Image 1 (cartoon, rainbow, N blue to C red):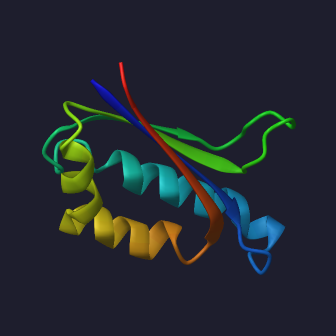
Image 2 (image 1 turned 180 degrees about the vertical axis):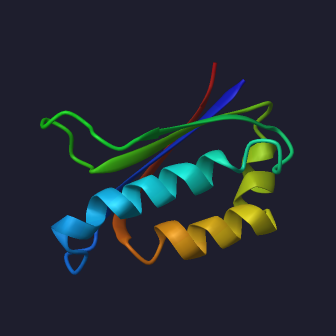
Length: 100
């Protein structure tokens, strides 16, 4: 099993009142990738981290094997979701991948 964790902050120009709607769209569309991307077993989305956190939202995915990270990253559905619901609004991306 491989875990792929990504965290982001919102760009400064993303208004505070728009963030709940954007978070929900990110969550729904990222979770929709399960069953579409080979090797992607689960997706969890963290929309409300505790105040000590350094990032505003996070994605925690589980994949079958290490090679599936590349498949996930380049899969057309993932690219579409990332380009539509994540990248336009976020910055300061941090990523951690590990095997368990």
